[in-house]
Image (cartoon, rainbow, N blue to C red):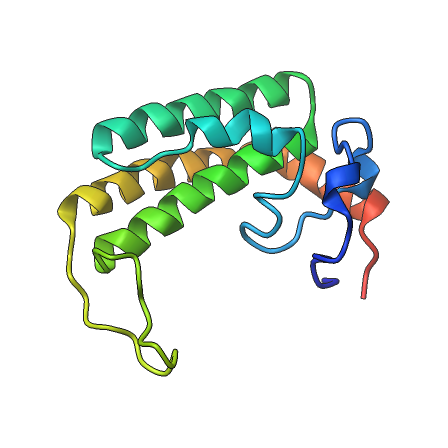
Amino acid sequence: MVKFDYNRDFSTIDFRKNPELYQIGIGEQGVLLVEPYKSEILPYWCFKTPDVARESAQTIYNLFLDYKSQADFVGMDMARKFLQMGYTRSRRYANHKTGIKWNKNKTMVLPREIDDEKAQSASIFYEYYLNAKNDPLYINLKLQHKKLYEPQE
C-alpha cells in the first residue's frame, strides 16, 4: 500500500466531485481532511457519555447508509473512519482519563486510569464501526476503488 499523502492541498479538492482523488489510507488517515464529508459528519461526532455516543454513532451510521444508497464509496469510507475514530478516541479516554497516553518523552505509556463510561462509549462506536466495515457493498466498492484509483506497490 502506498503511504497516505498528507502533502496534498486538501482545501482545494471536493472529493464528492472527484472521488478518483480519494486515497483510502490506513485506519482513520485523512478523516479530518476530506471535504465535503468531514463537514457533514464531524458535527455529529461525540463520545462524552454512552447516551451521547449512541446518538452520535447511530447518526453517523445513518449517514453511512445514506451514502450507501447513493453508492458513494468516499462518503461510506469517511463515515466508517469517524465510527472507528469514535471507538479509538473513546478507548484512549477509557484507559487514560486525561487522554494523554505517553510520558513527555514518549518513551513510556502512563499508568491506566479506567473510565467505565468511556469504555461503554467505545463499545457502542465499535459495534457500528464493525457494521460499516463489514457491509458487503462497502467491501465491494472499496475493492473497486483500490483497483481503479490506488496504485499498487
